[in-house]
Image 1 (cartoon, one colour):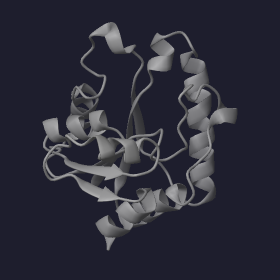
Image 2 (spheres, one colour):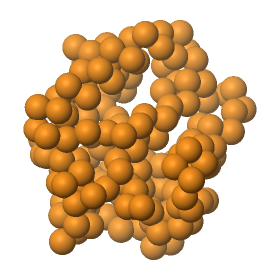
Image 3 (cartoon, one colour):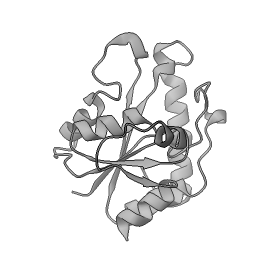
Image 4 (cartoon, rainbow, N blue to C red):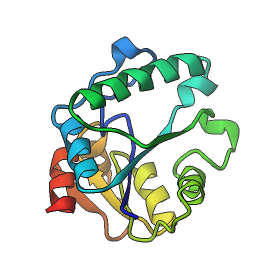
Length: 177
């Protein structure tokens, strides 16, 4: 099975220091939706793994998150794309859960649900914690320089074998060549 894991904020859509709390605040990064369509057309199952600590902090409810994802799914459908599943961690950073990236819980759940190993599976993110979670499950960590990506790259300390691309569109072009 061809599988790819994407972080959401900063990879698919513009990020915000104040969190994306409503559908009105969600807007795609140019080229990201079309990149997902290219993955779909190449036979990839596209899955999102995203930390959503705004829920745990009381900034928004799961209903708002569902409405954001509904807007995302509709925007994807308009360009002939789809995301097969969205996995999210609703916990605040201090909750001590196992699903909040950089811990591997979300990615392990993806492996379980899709009944597959994640070794070598492309996992694209814009933060160190995305890359660390990918490395933990032996997925291929890929950094995009959108969102927090440039700051992540500048800070250094990246896991070994990280590949870096300007954005999701460029990463997907390299993956599906």
